[in-house]
Length: 552
Image (tube, rainbow, N blue to C red):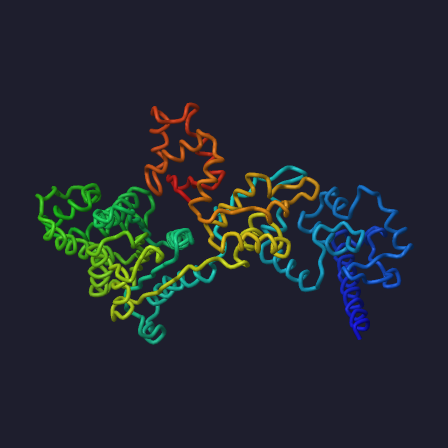
């Protein structure tokens, strides 16, 4: 019975292999304009197979060996296809993995099932820019991958986040919004993104914010700092002051719609505040003076701290309602809420959200809060406030928890960066996931380290990225992200490390103009800062875009 089962498995395997090779020959003919593959690459017949060994490899009989021996030793179907330089590299590997198989075949990653072929074809169709448009020509070496720059994974979380502003926009246009969206219609929308440090919370919210900005939203964000809880209200004031700065830029930017909107906001503010209130508002939002040209404002005298809080509540709630009357959707982002204090949490999640609801501006206002749940106990004031908000009749809360990345997520990141099919990188994704427990920050740093030490490298022979499997399997990773980062920093050049220290003094991000100031100062590296900054960008530590230098 065992011999019979083995024979059945053998025939099934051979039939599958033969079908794959025949399909490969057919597709080869399509790409070559009707020509068949060279005879030395034709698939072995069943009569050419002697046995199916215990190792699941079959052996070609003498006539098969003679046929194979007619091939030039230094030539494979992959090399022939690559040399003609007529097809995308992915297509060359695709055909080779279908045709050049068997015990003496030279396929890099031979197909074993028809399902794998369908999966490769689906990926090519879904992502032609990755698989059908080569990133380099000839045998030139492409730019080394920098993991973490592009946004991969979290598709469900992104879709869930963007569902909220989409629903708000439809609600604004729909007369029947009450019946269409049920009890949530009319409520203020608040999204809270949580997860442990390095799970990609800020990245997700900022990417969604960038998308909404392109759709005409006014998106402003700020971040609380650890150890500076006493300045939490100052962060909120700087958030709203940033809104005013954006209004100034919109007024002077040359876009007709932006200019009209900015001028409309200015008129509403003047109508909403008397001279005394505007002067008080100037004390918290200094940019008001440049925004309201011609309006006489001056700083008010010192106010006692307990009175100052209630003054701030009054001014900011009136300011946000005046802003929303201009009928432009706004998203405010506050990151690292766990580093805020109780008064500020109540100001933002209580007073401001309630004021938006009372002012009927909820249809144009979206709040996004980000916090680390691994740094927050049940006694933290944010925990209690979130529990109350979830039961609120005026605020609709959406919670998005970013758990660890799955093996499939990690494999998708690798596949997209290396421009390789999922089946080829699945084992690499599994081992990276195992060594990092799915922690995306840790995984990205590990992958970049593998690129830096050439464990992941570009092969001129196959013209795509490969890796040393033995080195990866034997790699000893650190017990924590901090230890891993220390080991990563130790590989940096002294000038690059010095530049990293300098930039870290300015927080999460700083203006590009600061680089010019640093370059002319005595603290800059001897040869200037441009090369170290470019190296940090190439390594994925920072991103220079939109006039800002931002830590990734």
